[in-house]
Image 1 (cartoon, rainbow, N blue to C red):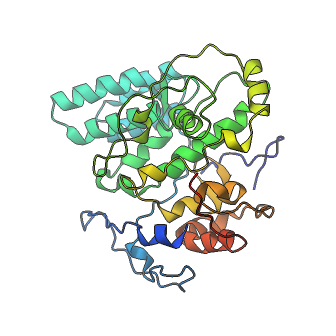
Image 2: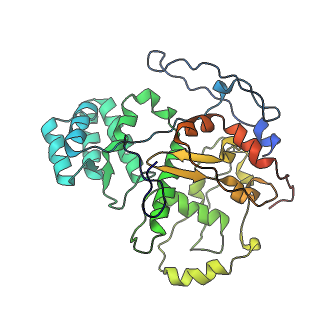
Image 3: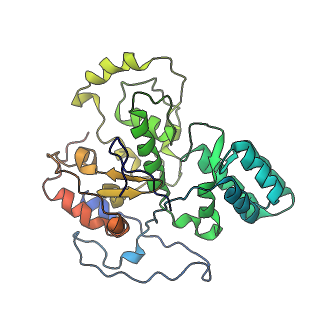
Length: 334
């Protein structure tokens, strides 16, 4: 596995029992000819009360994108976005690589809708959507073509672990942002902002929008709870504030009131590695208090093993059992 000089893995080329009992079991309705039948996976029950047939659980697949050249991106756009090769080639040459501008994707979405080519319109829209949200880059105007193959078969694009994709992108860019010479931050900045507002009420210009996102059945994104303001405080001013934080300044379990609207998913306590544009560690045991458990000194993270990342993700209940064994739940409301 190749590592850079900073020691990070480089991008690849090619609860409780009550919460668990509330876990939602959903089956994705797919067209039979497009989606292969999922065979039941029988595993030992390592979590009390857990299901034996894990095929009934909703979980997503990892996706490791491969970068495209100008020519490859143009050919892919011709196949999936309904444009001529000449038009696509002009765009990739203009972007100097395997990229499309956000404006070009939006314009193509409009064009494809006008000619009722709705599959190509949907792919343009979805690629634009993730390029503006979970997979942004520092240009803030371009979208990488490497994500386009995820929408090749539209009925199956929901099978990917989009939450994991967002986290991998954000963790990777936060690693870059921690380097002194880095000048900007990419990734899902809205997720980072919301996380700060939820857990650290004394940081930033925190203001509530007045929208109740905890209504059962309303399906409102939690992010709509906040009203965002442009800040003007520089990093040096925040450093003493961060250094002065105490445990009482942290809201350890901010989503307890949201569980009626969105039940807790045990996969949030998966411990291991996530795979996407790179490989990142996901170690909830380092802050297990946020799940209602007494914090303990966590062991060193396991060495990354690329060949078992997917199987560990599928059998996440084993990792959950491992990280809760050394601790116990506490029931004081936080």
